[in-house]
Image (cartoon, rainbow over all chains, first blue to last red; front, side, top):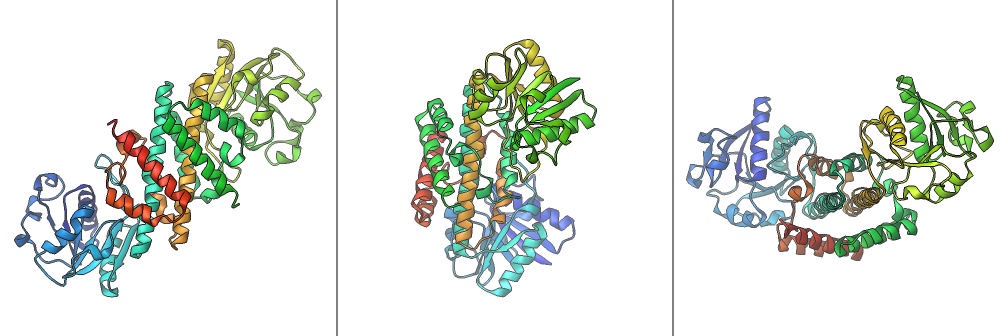
Length: 257
Length: 257
């Protein structure tokens, strides 16, 4: 039985609390001992209030302390912890393991997913990227990770940074392209839902074919007539600039094939 | 019973042939009378060879002739047809209905999806965007469309052009972002599959929340520290340029909220 304490009350903390409690109910060898949160009220609908503490002195012992706090707070919160030589991990894709205070054993427990409060996620499919200072700690982290996810990966700090940048491309930037498309639809009285099957298919296709092979459309075909028509259609300077630079980038990439 | 003839043997023609034959088997009121193809050999595994003709003089009569040919061939092929005053439709998202020769009644039957030979698609979920010169023809087209798809939309030429541009953003450009991410993974010995749940979730999320509300990440948070770290990480000038322009565009967009 691995004893876990979650520190934080934000978006990720809430998803972790739900996931760990589900794992407990499924009688996996995990126990969510406590949650540390400055603001209890965020969590009272998720976990029994006896388990929520907001004072360091009330903290019990655990095998692993998971900091689900903002990137900027990792260093400060980890230095406030009232104990030494315990396993303390952060959950950030952007921060190196070294941001944690050195008085405890360090690790990173990074769930590679975008969490929105409004939308429940299935934790079992979320890749968990783990890193630790030593093998024994890695094994504890792996046990914990396996109770909530089927996809556990060993990812070093440098790789995690690469993943974090790559995630910005496939999540934030992709979502922004969806946003531009929805704007174009709105301006032309077209329901955005009409594009959703294409969006889903585009995302699914790359689980079968590598993206470089899945590329279609006027840019890769060097179909200058269609490209010109699209450029003429786009009235907003920002959209036009993005259209051009992405078209050019697809064409540069196509030359590698 | 609506009689259909498909003209063409490429990617879309093949998917249509499969879809119409499935509709026939399901005893929907549709009959794929013939397929006109210069190159029979592309199609012999999909349809009985008696039904494939490669000479205009062998063409039977039908209620609708669907031109599944390249954008550049629409005008030429439609002018070669050896009959007048029939319903002839093209399947292009990029071309106006007027590209069809005026000797026949015109229409557009545009399936909004990206077709890859290597991957079977479920036609029933593909939005079909229809346009015609008159109401009677629209009704024929609608009957045909309903035999293969559950999502039939009336879309005028100007709207179709908007959709075609929007589709480039959510399909070609998004796929290119996937490609960049897969490159970053490869350079750092990370399996690209680790990003796939995030890719799927990003695509799914916008069926629940509009993209402008789904936006997360360093750009929208104005998290300059993370942005700087990502910019430092990206060694390839083209990736860096895209990172900057997309970050800026997300931030400009955020100001509207």
